[in-house]
Amino acid sequence: MKGGQRGIFVPFAPLLLGAGYNFADRSSPRSREGAVRRSIAGNDMNVESLLFLAQPAFVIPWYGIGAALGIWVLYDMFTANRDVGPALKAAWPIIVLFFSVVGLAMYIFTCRPRRIGSTRKREGDAEAKRVHHEFVAGTWKKVVGSDIHCVGGDGLGIMSAMVITRMLGFRFWPEFWTEYAVGFAFGWFVFQIPAMRHMGHSWRAAAWKGGRAEFFSMATVMVGMGLVMRFVTPGIVGSPPTPGTAAFWGIGALGLMVGFIVTYPMNWWLVTIGWKHGMT
Image (cartoon, rainbow, N blue to C red; front, side, top):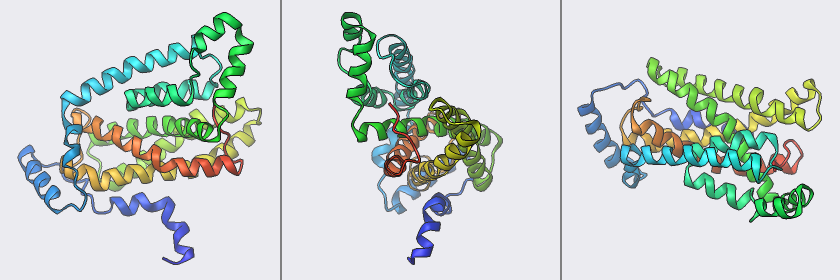
């Protein structure tokens, strides 16, 4: 691939990944079962180990536990771990809802110092603040925070748009661009601009800097989502699942996780060059 083409490929990789996925297929359950068998047989990626993502026995507890843990995380950030920034206080519960126990582990290991509640009670708010900032000082933890902030906003927009477009029976391209636009808008206006304003930027600077960071972050999140849509979804259910199915939510959670992983190097780069701030 020539150098000039490489820059074009990265933001639009999800388009290429999804090109072979027939979103217009709204076939019967029996037809979908046959499509699943054919997809598994002909797919280079073996996704049989991921079939549990379409099972209510997995998806319902996953989101039920995620909702309960998300409420606990929100409570913890307003009582014990109070020095978490406002942007992450909004993003962490969303992440924990979708990532469930994985999200809780990420919160504990990257954002919550051990015994922070006891430290606050015993030694006061100033010492608790010092302990928190010391705990999250590592670059990799700051980038995790930036990634959480990114995927929390983008993911909420993407999943909200996906619910509507699937219910309306959109074909692939209208669905993709609607999800992209709504995810970008959520990330830019609801998460990036307020975060930039909190850091002291003017509205104009916050809009520009937030939009610049959001463009690159959103592109890589959608690469991850595109990988799941192109290679995993057809092998699990054959055609795009609707919001009333367990598969929709199970595969959606996986897509956001893959998006989180794919956008991490991009967030590292954006933090390194100063286009994004490491979130703590």
